Length: 162
Ligand SMILES: [Zn+2]
Picture 1 (cartoon, protein in one colour):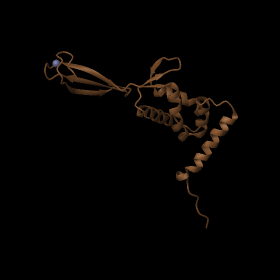
Picture 2 (cartoon, rainbow, N blue to C red):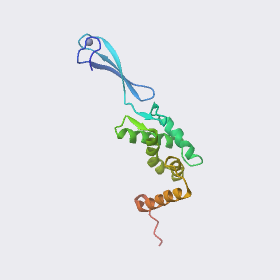
Picture 3 (cartoon, rainbow, N blue to C red):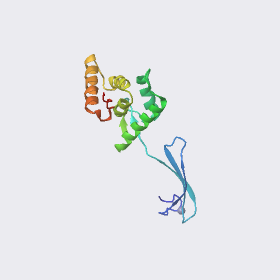
Picture 4 (cartoon, rainbow, N blue to C red):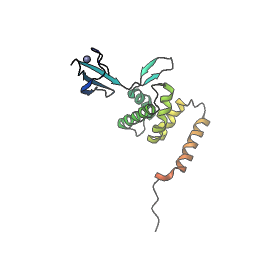
């Protein structure tokens, strides 16, 4: 990082502080050449392109509020939702994209929501995948059943009868 005062190529970090929301790091730097200090702010930006084309910063809170309705009456806690929002953010950041469509966030919510609660998953999927009829629900449920049956590694083994 260049010194903004004397353009020296080398500056050293004298202090780093994570912001309250945990989304940025503020660094105090000092130039060894002229001795002056300055601050930089470092963020990994992730912007969401809304349907109307407007960009807004990715927000875990918005993920939670979007999913909360689908979880009404289900055994899903606020902590579950916070963990889900974190997984969604990690999945999206892992793609390396700095901008994502709002719709892609909806799609990224589906896998962790399915792990959390299948009923909430179906409710949410019905909106994001634009289910139009009972047939759409039926095929989604069939798919869940088939995949649950196939992936029974984690299933409890029944006690043998003596
Ligand atoms: Zn300098």
